[in-house]
Length: 412
Ligand SMILES: *Cc1c(COP(=O)(O)O)cnc(C)c1O
Image (tube, rainbow, N blue to C red):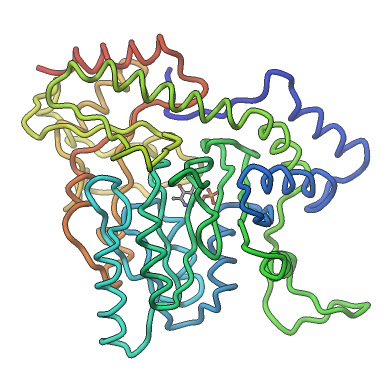
């Protein structure tokens, strides 16, 4: 089976060395030498004099960034609609409201003009400016951060960059996550590097780093006993997981190079197939890590088995997501990938290739039906024609050739 994006450990086995060190020195806790060293490695990697706090997940990083921006119940946050739910769910943890912003065609990320329109319209309708702006580096593609920062600065709104998928991607040479007030990274099992589960928040300065650290460790006051004046969280990364992270930081640049290599190979091989388009950076200013390689299918393309698409409900989460999913009564919703996209997914799966739909835009999710959304139709249209292909360090050149050959065979 060729999986979408699997974790890959360093050949030198450094992950296990650092974990063993943690056991040998009895640092089996959510702080310690591996955590500190991992943060130093990350600070060096992102550069720009930034500070980094290692956390238990990328979702926790988004949550704490919002708290540090002073988000309170009733506040509004402008967030990219075309994303994984971890970009927007923490807004609701705080009793605040996401305001979803649709995408531009070339990057698939937050449309800056729509963002400015939304900011002004929210001000007109509620009397208040949104409290933060969250652009997302979808599948590793940089957002138009120059324009987004210009707008954010104009209205004095902090930017929280969700670079969970864009670790090491660059805009005009600068690493994503270092432009805004805060930058989010994720080290979940399928991201650019893994700590099994984990994340980090990139901070602009020491004061912000201390604030995040304080909230991440139950917000304690300086007394001999536990004295609490604010609500805190248990969000610090464990010293064991940080050991994995230290090992992974020795190969992060190899991983990024490999993802880019796989993307280039797809570009070369898919060129010959009419009706299939590889999603690529609009120009050299956008240096994507190509965390996942994505394609779009012309709606007129006919795929084997297309007449059977969505005939049956799915029995387990696509992609084998952990945990439990609710069983559903109907195999369809009012917004889903086209029949030919679903047919190609099923065809590839039957040939031992895992492909997945794109993230379904948040403004089309039933749970967010009541949230304001500023839409131009772009993310919904791309969701219906798009698909993610296997990418990452465990995918070989031979795998890519087999995947493209199989796609060719699937086309009628
Ligand atoms: C993975 C991801 C996150 C954070 O994920 P965790 O699994 O909590 O580490 C946040 N935003 C996006 C867009 C992601 O893909």
